[in-house]
Image (cartoon, rainbow, N blue to C red; front, side):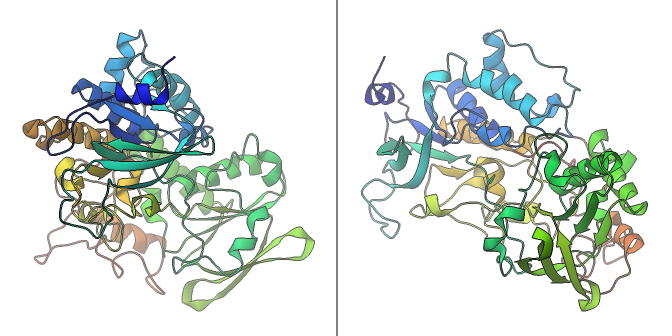
Length: 482
């Protein structure tokens, strides 16, 4: 068996403008990280994948009970499939809907075990910092062309790895946004751990007893919230006394209800339609324009939730569990010594931010984009996958696969392939042209809205009165979060 130093010395590559004979470090062995490694290998480059978890796909395994709304067709990367097929892998039916566990067991772990990738993946290795060898962030003279220094911790031992380039595909899982309405934790949130159930609890499985016959508050308006709410309604039908409250910061959940039958992915359309029906029949109590102010232990072992709703109305709830489906934010601390160009609001690359800004886009569409949009002032350093979206929602696996395909082409010196970015996926059935009307149908326009009066995403018409879409003619992307 080779030593770590011998293994590393065998993983060499040459990247334009960077020090030769060093690996390209990929941080994270999730769907996008492994796709990046597959594309780099196809280009004759040498990836070294560093994964904090004990096995590939560790973050996806954490929500393995959740079924994706996109079929296998949109959940796998082309270069990864080519590697797998050489190893005798047979693809699941392309129109089947996998769970997170299916994605891990039938795709990610077989991919990580291929002869080409297996020796290039180090699990149990956490990246804690990235910089340029010999210079800190402030130094400009002599910076270009220096290798990256990637500091890792493995088994309690610190080891520095030099890299020709770095692709940070570490994702955002485990870094939830706080519950406070101002982007800060609510008062008492740090002491509410015993009641916090995580963003995607296993309501019908391992954690059933925590929710059965009890009162759960779900805060958030994304697909994570919808999945949990629908699981709770199924539990409610089986377990009397199960109570469900859903709190959203906006004036209406129309965005989450989506396009229904018009959605190109039926499972996603059904998700929104079923949730709307549950609210309509009273199975779920909906609190709109909710601002959570304080959390505190209450009588009977419950959590007291204090906040305000529409028109400043005081809200006080006594709950047994609180699901914070408030989305995620990137951990940028490990990139502190790298020169990044990030949007001040979304913490996404400045060229990408206008394409994904939820203030300007109501439907989740993003035009195809690659290396040119994701580049930073420090050449050869990229944030990819879910982390590239910063604090914007609706990241999709297929988007990340196209990102890393383009970056691999660029690092191999194929500028034409890097610039030729393409992405074709089903439409959501809802966009800015009709979101305003949908929100008006769901709620009276008062209080602090998130539709036409707040942001640009729901502006229904152009200056001449012609209906417009926030996304133009670009096909709406759809798929699974990564």
